[in-house]
Length: 468
Image (cartoon, rainbow, N blue to C red; front, side, top):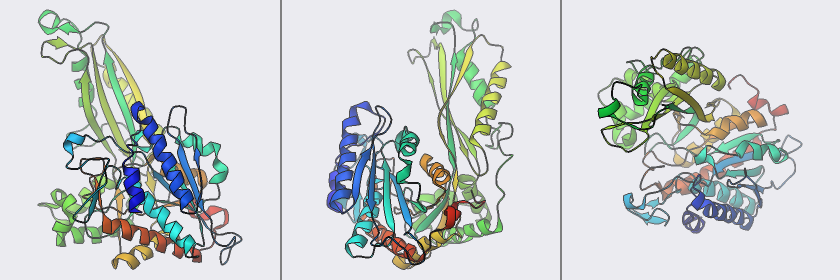
């Protein structure tokens, strides 16, 4: 597994960068070859024109029937082989050379998501070699996740027969809450990315000549942005909080062991130390909910045209704004309300300028059912390997494909994170602990073994509940 990871990390599969397109395709072909060498059927699925291909692989169950069903369960493993760019000057180790130190493996993609993908592949392969694979394990690995999953949905639709009998979707694309206690992720926020652009009919002007005589795009932008968020950090968008799913007693109780652990073992939860500093347990619970189950609006950056000096009135100003959404907010409704609010605010300005609103990337929220049979199987597998019940957590980030796959395939998803909170995914010196990678592989093996006893649900009833 480490040999394959070393070779794969050496391929800078950075999506969204034309200069790295060939490296991405080389990385996809490498993964296809690894799957084939380990006993799977594998091939490439074309992505959108000019975009990276998807990799498909399948390890078949040793029998065509399960204990109580006409066919074995079908497990669909989702992941992505593309990575975020790395600035070599800011790394302590070469980002595209796998480097081991003090029990950790450093390199871009070690944790997000090449390491966990290989752990899942080797888990299925070892079970097949040991004649213990009693479920079909299919792999759907895309190459555009870090670029908004461009072309992913169309590619799956065009090859839907490969996936339409999936019973459960498995992914490992996030991290533990801290360093010591394993976790199971049961929820992700969705996201709506937008770009606001305010343009003047003028060229860039000199403030000493035209200041005070023209409508300035940057001043207009500041006024618009000021009307997006209240002083208490809540969004001003009408209806933004109308459809949030109420907190249940069951979910509220899931926060209690998390809070207790963060208070009793702060050094082991160092990623969250600032969150737990100087607060009561109830305040900490509210902060966790704010990050995981409450929606938010963020202004990321503002940019202007023309030379960046203090005498220029820029002819245009551009701002990046995102909204994180949660159950049961609807992407279309929030997007519409946001656009209407921005245009209303802008329309009230005394300005000659014009505004454009561009919705860039959209991903729906995902919420699993911690009481369903697949989560129970995952919980048992984790406790068996680590000797500790997992913490049930949600994430504030988004994975565009998961909610869509659940709805399209009518299959429940289970998210088993392998890495620790200090893995530095998307940051400098990304890493994964070797122990976590090896134990992660064994967790997946145990999970797949546990599925042997489960029946195929009629009409994929696991995904037909009201949970999602």
